[in-house]
Amino acid sequence: MEDVFLLYARIAAYGFRRHSAYRAAALAGAFTNSVFGILRAYVLIALWQARPGLAGYDVTDAVTFCFLSQAFIGPMQVFGGGLQLAGRVRSGDVAVDLLRPASLQLWSLADDLGRAAYLFLLRSLPPTFLGAALFGIVVPAGPAAWAAFAASFTLGVLVSFALRYLTALSCFWIVDDQGVQSLSLVLTLFLSGMVLPLNLFPGWFGELTRTLPWAAMVQVPADVYLGKRDVLEALAFQISWAAALLALGALATRAARRKVVVQGG
Amino acid sequence: MIEVDRAGRSFTVGRGSARRTVHAVRDLSFTVGAGEFVGYLGPNGAGKSTTIKMLTGVLAPTSGRLRVAGLDPTRRRTALARRIGVVFGQRTTLWWDLPLKDSFQLIRYLYKVDRIDFRRRLDELAGLLDLGSFMDTPVRQLSLGQRMRGDVTAALLHDPAVLVLDEPTIGLDVVSKAAMRDFLRRLNAERGTTVLLTTHDLGDIEKLCRRVMLIDHGRLGFDGTLDELRATGPDGDSLEEVVARLYTGSAPGTPAPP
Ligand SMILES: Nc1ncnc2c1ncn2[C@@H]1O[C@H](COP(=O)(O)OP(=O)(O)O)[C@@H](O)[C@H]1O
Ligand SMILES: [Mg+2]
Image (cartoon, rainbow over all chains, first blue to last red; front, top):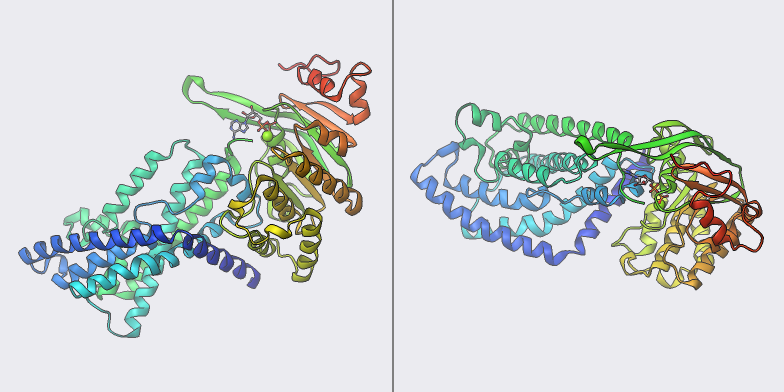
């Protein structure tokens, strides 16, 4: 048990190091995320000045939401990708991964958590501090609130991994995964709260978007940060989706093993 | 050590009316005993890699039965992985962005190799395969020959009883090739490791293999010693000519492709 933990901890550390080889890209990402954060903040400020209290947020809440969502882009890989798996399935290199006495899913997860930790440092902190300095943002009061946010953020990364893993696995069945990738991108952008807070969507549609797994990625951690949501209920929501999607990923991995099409010599 | 009993693997390719079934391997039977060194030959697309993927549990057979080191590869893949070593010459098990020695460390954790055994074995392999000068180099900067030596080391760190190699000498220069052959020969002779070797290089076969199996269109076309293989052709024919004749299916005893 301890061995197993140590193995995956090593793999996570490797994910962290692997990404640190691409520091320039991470810094460029941080810059882009910050600039877009500022642009979006102005749009949201205008919107909230016209309609104060919209979605249950005041202006500062809305600006905070904006910079938080920008900060989530890197670690939660909101624009998709982040896993090498899809490429390895396409090239057939996954045959080597399948040989290893380890779970493909846990392996990918550990690697992805290492990646997320690195991108948290390089791509989440800069836009958040910039937003705080330029506009002023909400700051959670006390260690309990911070701990709740840390848990919710980590669960957000987990759900994001689970969804991206399923997307990557689809390469086992379909040769050209571009359609799946773009569908997943659109769903993630709109249903996570990245483009607009989901609280803005009215009626049954809004209700639906707040129940789907993508909400666990941006909307829920942001609401936990802002203290807009019952913490236990929010974490339970995220845990349920993470568990369901990871279980689906495990089933899909097993199915892929049985009917794999591993390309090439 | 390896038992293959009427194993077959087919793939469905294409869609709609172009949909058809490719039989990569059909009705394949052979056994390999402990300590044997067997060459597995066949033209491109003959089904060699598919056989190896079935033997290692990466691919489930669509028919028949396989056992490697006493285990069913598909059902007991993880247990099997700890007993066999595999090298795919055209792919790497090493971590692209890590120094070579870090890849070995990860493999130690992965295969649960005891620290002291690991040290001893790595020192020995590093000596035999001359890895010393590039242990700290990231894998992406290694030459093909260096990477291949790293891959062979990685496959042997857990001291497997069986080593399966899919084209391990592909693209190597003569010096690297000779070093690799020398190493494999000693591994088999001194440690008694069972080796199944796929190659297009008949030099590998002549230098290393007592027994040769030849596969074509997914079927076993020949299984015997190197001398028996030579004897299928007229005296004075080179091994190359003999094998080429078997590949085209004109030699007696070779089932014609359907
Ligand atoms: N994943 C796959 N999907 C469809 N056909 C495949 C697949 N893998 C192998 N094949 C086919 O099976 C045959 C044998 O391939 P392979 O075992 O790679 O040959 P070899 O290694 O001897 O060159 C080839 O015709 C190849 O096209
Ligand atoms: Mg091959």
